[in-house]
Amino acid sequence: MVTVDARRGRQGGEAVNGVYVLLDGASGAVAALLDARVLTASRTGAVSALASSLLARKDTSTLLMIGTGNLATYLVQMHRSVRSYSSILVWGRDFAKAQALAERLRASSQPAVCEAVSGLAAAVARADTVCCATASGAPLVHGCDIAPGTHVDLIGSFTPTMREADDDVFRRARVIVDTYDGMRESGDLLGPVAAGALDATQVRDLAALLVDATVPRRNAEEITVFKAVGSAIADLAVAQFFLRRHNETATTGTGAIR
Image 1 (tube, rainbow, N blue to C red):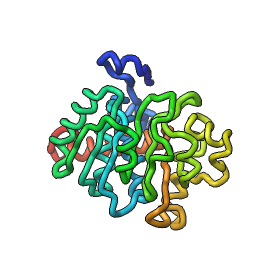
Image 2 (image 1 turned 30 degrees about the vertical axis):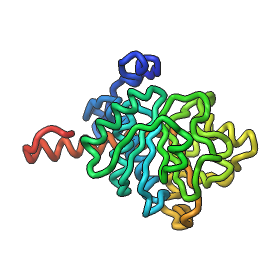
Image 3 (image 1 turned 90 degrees about the vertical axis):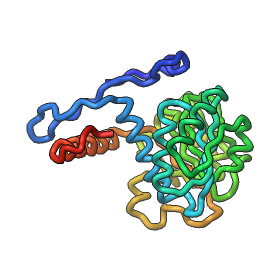
Image 4 (image 1 turned 180 degrees about the vertical axis):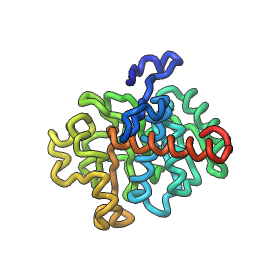
């Protein structure tokens, strides 16, 4: 059960609030209650990092985080778990929030250099991996700014009226989605398909990325896009993971899960 309202985030509150109920598959009993904010952020970051582990170049060094909300810290941490970024750039509509996030990341992202940036187009051009998690209704990432070999991770645009990337991004890139069902929900996919910039028959999903050796990055110059909308199976997998960790720590007496 979740409520989502971006206005709350702009007013200093939480944009996403809710609770996840994990039921035991055998007995049907309640096995765990989880904070939906933590669960959503954790699974979103984990799925993006999983895709990035196969699509981002091995020698990638600069990560651009677009967006300063609750997801941003999780996304940076998860992306850094699969690639050794030496530079982390942060951009937000509110530069003060971008600076605050960069400061928090400095404390937890050593030895990477973390800095807030004001020029988005220049930052996109500098980045090897672009991660975008916003509630934007208009494109923020433009294909003309993306350098060859860049991996783009798009998290927002979970309704048909939302956009984080323009048609040119999809015209230039090979596109992977978390699920095919999500293609009916995102303006970032519906818009380019309608404009003829993206051939829906050429889009592959995360499952194919994991099992087909021809789907991950093909060469150093290829531009790749991973578009996530969210899926119940990812929520379930992460909820089960948290429950296993809880049971392990309860057995060993090592304390609470963090």
